[in-house]
Length: 204
Image (cartoon, rainbow, N blue to C red; front, side, top):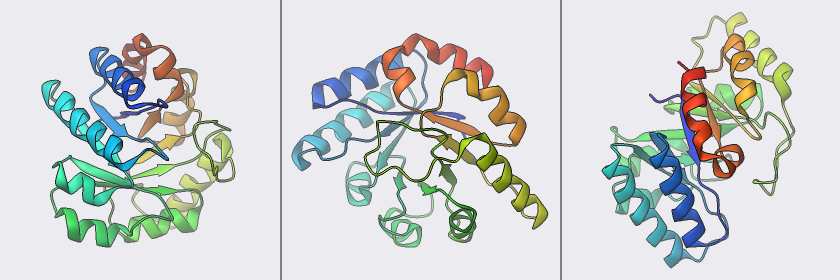
């Protein structure tokens, strides 16, 4: 599984598509299409285009929240939030071979996600971010450390956890030392797509 996800950003379909193209051009191999409050027809159109673009780059295309759209366009999978459809139901709709990621903010939520057998967990936010409207309490590095330590104390296998929420390049080393698998990045890649190469090098 790739260690770097780009979470798409943009206020219009054109902005979203342009940012996704730039990320793919610069070497990202995993796109999560996320466009909150978008008109449904525009969002579907963006998802269809994103899937096509990702196919051309041999990259993974994941849809945020919308399980049925992910199924309809045959995306590689879906990412569900805590208030969205359950992983179990999403799995039933999408089938065994699709990637299903789930959001978590606390240890009980991480344990719930492990129990649901999702493929990866998006754990965050690391710090305050403006890209999410209803932000969960900020974890910080210490929050990640405590959660990973408690999983170890329970002798549980550490799942594939992606740090999310205001993550920047300089965070990678410390996150990896803590035991975080990968990162989901939006702002820094949108602003500076060429930084992707440095992210990938740091995550090796």
